[in-house]
Length: 227
Length: 232
Image 1 (cartoon, each protein chain N blue to C red):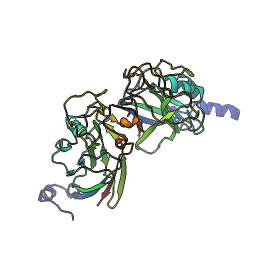
Image 2 (cartoon, rainbow over the protein chains, first blue to last red):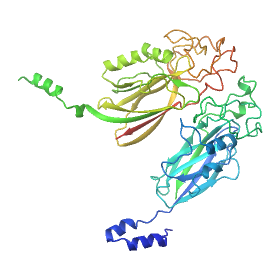
Image 3 (cartoon, helix red, strand yellow):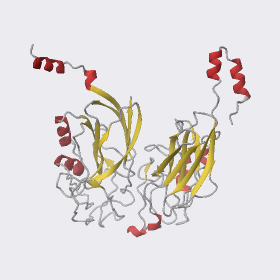
Image 4 (cartoon, chains in turn red, blue):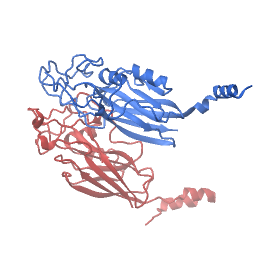
């Protein structure tokens, strides 16, 4: 269904020439997307993933740039609500539960604005110090009704916490340790890709993780379908 | 005027705008968390040229790049072949997460793009791209690059300053996060061809152990670099 709000209708009436009226009267495209996220890892639950439609210029993170505090909170502790709060008026979604390895979650996002057609999704790999995965501003403008696009995601390192793998530093079930703290003690305070975890089974005797928590790229599969 | 001479003059007078077929905006990012790239070499060349090829032996000049970060020999080779190159556009080492942007003008015949730089600290690991078909339609194109092993040096993971071709060991860790006095991870290798790097092992022993690399810092997962080409 296409709805014309009374405000848009009024704008059209008030516009001077007929030509102008036609162009100003272009109907808002009520676009609905269904999105599915699958956790491809062996034993890295994804913290309740957050998703948002936003403008092209916005992003949850940039490789090589310092993480925002909202990203740090998500990547160290799994709470993505701060990322959504960066653009509270935008179409957004937050899952109610972690996404277990081997499982998928599906949801829908709607927009009536062509300039809100970049999609970002993020969630923490919870059995790590500060690894997360997701997509950063996928362009959906050219996705036509009935079409799907498939994205395989990399694991990122927020650069905000050293990958110590020590007991008490990892919030996921493998450790049950601390989530977010304000310290930034990684080797470089910028977002990069993640190098993977080492684990006790790979001769890091101090690690609280074992081979089950190791992962490789890609970590998530994301399928977006336009309706 | 004879025909040969006329042709020679015609070729010599071909306007520059016809020779320079494409202007590319290139953006390149080191995606790794704990590895630098040594001076990068970008080169647009013809279809029958390669800086490296999977499952072949590295040239001496590729070996010098992969073991010590020296691109001068490769640059001489490429210049002799009339390639369009950008040598060291990051002006030195490229840190984890760092991006650079620059323009590259390419002649129409040089329609393949290759890239190399050593991954530091490794024995002979390098980020590579072999003969990507340069897009010609207007648009922005994104590619992800993997880490390769030149197959020319044993991955002993000992940092001893060894960067000359044939010299064992790793030159240095620009992050200064390495250990010392490692005994060596491995002392012989069978695959002497260029292949996907198997990654480094490292350890958490800063004064001994098998490796001078830190397993929490110097490992990577592919891809190791992102390339964005904007065709105007």
